[in-house]
Image 1 (spheres, one colour):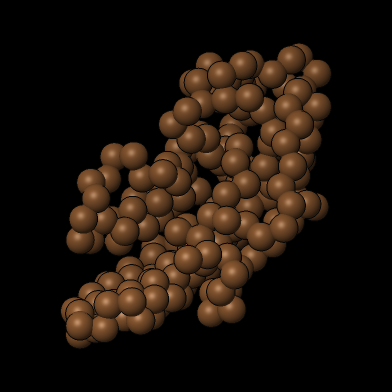
Image 2 (cartoon, rainbow, N blue to C red; image 1 turned 30 degrees about the vertical axis):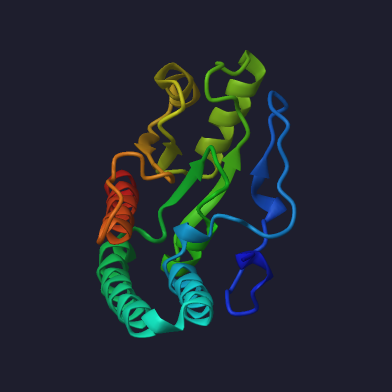
Length: 200
């Protein structure tokens, strides 16, 4: 089953205007943003598509599938309301990321992503690149730069050195969250907390 071919899911497309390419690392995104799980609305829509497919192929368990969907939907909708309250005070605070993967989450909660830098996670950028990135951070008055677990601390520190920009960490793969009931909501809550903490 190909979720990306479904007309029941609101997909987004990459915003090429927000790519800050400093030459050390060439990386392009084209077409549909595949990071559906980072959008609560899209997660609910995807769950509906999956449930419909399960019911079609296994009608004997229709009630169980639909009950699971109802519970999941209610839990995610409750989490959305809580995250809206948490993130509203910092929604206008600008930031940069090192991975253009958070568009669904950002659109859901109206966050102010100023763009993303294309640098290698384990290799410190060259001097010209660092100067350019730092100038961009200051010119855009960024509050925070978000890295991910795979980025070396030395790379991140070299990027913000000499600025007042804070460092935050986002984990889009939920590496510290156990699989099972409630795991997705916990993931959303931790992602929201990471944004809120760094942008305050």
